Structures are given as structure tokens and as C-alpha cells.
Amino acid sequence: DSADKGEYRHYMLKEIYEQPKVIKATMEGRITATRVLEQALGTDAENLLENVRHVQIIACGTSYHAGMVARYWIEDLAGVPCSVEVASEFRYRKHVIQPDTLFLCISQSGETADTLAALRQAKKAGFRAALAICNVPGSSLVRESDLVIMTQAGPEIGVASTKAFTTQLTALLIFTLALARHNGLNAEREADIVKAIHLLPGQVNDVLALDGEIEEMSKAFMDKNHSLFLGRGSQYPVAMEGALKLKEISYIHAEAYPAGELKHGPLALVDSEMPVVTVAPNNDLVEKLKSNLEEVRARGGELFVFADKAADVKPEEGLHVMQIPSVHEITAPIVYTVPLQLLSYHVAVLKGTDVDQPRNLAKSVTVE
Ligand code: AGP
Image (cartoon, rainbow, N blue to C red; front, top):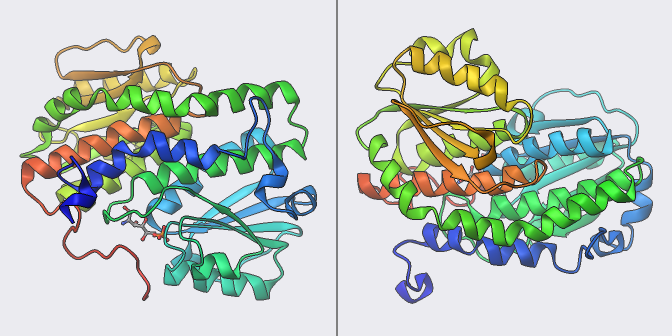
């Protein structure tokens, strides 16, 4: 067991550190220097994607957050409407199916009961086809889907999902580019994003090098009972994922909000006992975010901001800034996930919880 963990104290930390390698493995054979190789997504992929007019994503937990990020990409790059829903809600309600809707399930294990039930329903209901993004070859999800894009994360042991999420995002971005090509994405924009995908392993490594600073930052969370995570745009699901990681393994109550919703309620909670973690967007929304930060600071809230070093968010009293190397706006959610994983990990270690096997949770939820 300890041999499997190698030099690492926990599986979760090992899996966080494996991300440069497994992201690379997930992109390998699926992109050239400048293009997505559509045929690598399956022999039938081209034919199937040609007529997709809508995408319905279904997943649970962390995989659902990957789907939330993908929605921003799919609507932005492919201009195809996309809905995302947790499987346990989807399976128990009536839904209107738009013609030519692709049903997309995301699951690390491929055995999550609600996701499988939703897929089985969808197959009877008249969706165009079922695509799976999955990490376990031979799983029920893989066997029952028409088209499969495997993530290459390797076995994930820690209950808190880490490398599965970033490889799901990598696969989803490659899928989005293939879909976008059928919907007018030009070769120049495709090349720009494919080049950004190639940079990911190196960029994730650069973020891992901030581990010591993040460990230092984690001390501020140790004696807190609540926390708020804010993000805008495609960084909002990253904030959701960061909050899920913190509650799962450190048992600190963490809630994620889109930053623009702050003054519609959660601002009332903010005081010096409520740390606010913010994932800054890599675009012109950063200016709006700065005004959200001011609102928090004015109420005595302590802020922990993860921002592009070019975004010019300056540290001040009550405002801690973790500078992240500049990355492409589209791939930013993948890179910014990593410091939040490390933050949760270090808070949990300080609190002495069972990091790899948090109380009450199972790795794969095969029952309702
Ligand atoms: C993530 O850290 C979780 N433990 C959990 O939310 C998980 O992502 C969810 O149960 C879905 O699992 P799946 O990806 O195997 O379907």
C-alpha cells in the first residue's frame, strides 16, 4: 500500500502530482501540433458530430463540475446550445428533448448508479447518441455508450477526485474542438487552443511548484467552520469544485457562488470568520471581480485570490494573492483547479482528517 503511494503521504497528493503526466496521456494521439484528430475520438465520431444541434450533459459530483466547465466551452467555441444536469435530478423528471441532441455522460468510475440510470433512460427517449467520457475501461458506462472518449488518468484511489477531473476537462476540450469544427470554428482559432492544450502539462507543473506557498496559506483555514468560494465565467465551476474538495476532506463548510451573485445574499455571511477564496477569470471580467473583492474587504472578510500574475490584483491587508503563471483563457479552468486541490489537501492534513477515505463517503456510488 505505502509502496503504491511512493514518496507521497497520501494517494490524493500523489494523484495531484500525477496530473501533468495524465493530462499529457489524455491528449496524446488525439491532437497534432495544431488540430484535433477527430478520427481518434472514434470511427463514427465525424458522422455523429456532424448533425449535433444540442448537447445534454449528465454527471454527478466532480464529474458534474467538469460538465459545467464544458458548457462554457461548447457554447463559446461550437455555438451549440448545451444543458448540464446532475443525474439524480435528470432521471426523475420529464424533459423536453430537442432534435439531434447528443447525450453526454461524464464519470470517472463509469459505475455511478444515477448516471447509468439516466443513460439507460436517455437511450429509450430518443437522443441522437450517447457519448461517454470515462476513466475505467470496460465499465458499464463504457459498454453501454455509442462513442467513448477515455480519460487516461489511471486508477484514482483517493475518494476526493483530482486527476480524473483535470483529464475529463482535457478530453472535453478536445471533444468541444471537434464539435466546433463542424460548427464554423476556423483553423486559426483551433490551432490557438490546441497549442494552449499542449502547454498544460508544463503549466500544471509550474502551479505544483507553488505547493509550499499554498501549504502556508492553508493555515488560515484550520480553525474556520465556513468558507465561500467565488468565480466568474468558466472559473465558477472551478470554484464549485474547490468548495467540494474542501468540504469532502477537511469537513469545513464551503459554498461556491458566481461572484456576481455575492450581493444577492451571501454577502450577509461575510465577516472575519468567513474566508473567501476567489478564482479570478483570465479576461476582462477580472475588473468586475475586483469590485466584488472590495465588497468583501469592506465587510472585514479575509480574501484568498488566485489570479493571473498579469491581472494586477495587489496584496493588501486582508487580501492574500496567489499569483498563477499566465495561461490561455480557455485552458485556465484546468490550471486553476490544481491550487485549490492543494489548498484542500493541506487544510485536511492540518486538521488530521482521513484524507484518502473521508468519513461517510465511497469512491464509487453504485447505489442510489
Ligand atoms: C468527488 O471528489 C467525489 N468523491 C464525487 O463527487 C464523484 O465525483 C461522484 O460520485 C461521481 O463519480 P463518477 O465520476 O465516478 O461518476
